[in-house]
Amino acid sequence: MEQIPAGQIRFSTEKLQKRTRELGQEIGQDYAGQELILISVLKGSLYFFADLTRAVDLPIQLDFISIGTYPTTTNQKGIVRITKDLDLEITGKHVLLVEDIIRTGLTTAYLVQALQARMPSSIKVCTLLSNPDEQLINVPIAYCGFVITATRLIGYGMDVREQGRNLPYIAELPKSS
Image (cartoon, rainbow, N blue to C red; front, side):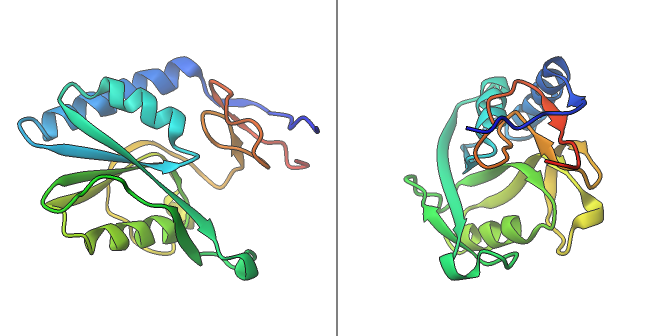
């Protein structure tokens, strides 16, 4: 199996952990006294989600959702389907959708719309990384770890051909990868 070369470290393990703790504290304060369900968008947000949920100091429920592209339209952006749906009922609950990265916003907007149809009390988005320059649609991001520019990244859940997710930091990929 081919090894994907990671380039310069963009966000160290320590920097990721510090910012994740800060986000967790902010979420805990904002939702104090309320029922909150955190939903991880698999697979990319898995590591961030695990660390974030441990940093939120209040009772929470966890769930997972996964998306994929339609097989005949894989070259088109924004055409997705839910491949793993929620197990929890979110009607009347406060929901926080947790993403690893928001680039165009199309996928996140689709998920928010799909979840809003289930009538939660509120739905907000938390993302580790956001690239506002690439956004094609306005996504209401309530919590953002870091703002980035157009760059290919690997690690801390993000992959290239399913490799590199388990790196404890986020690195830039060389242009040749």
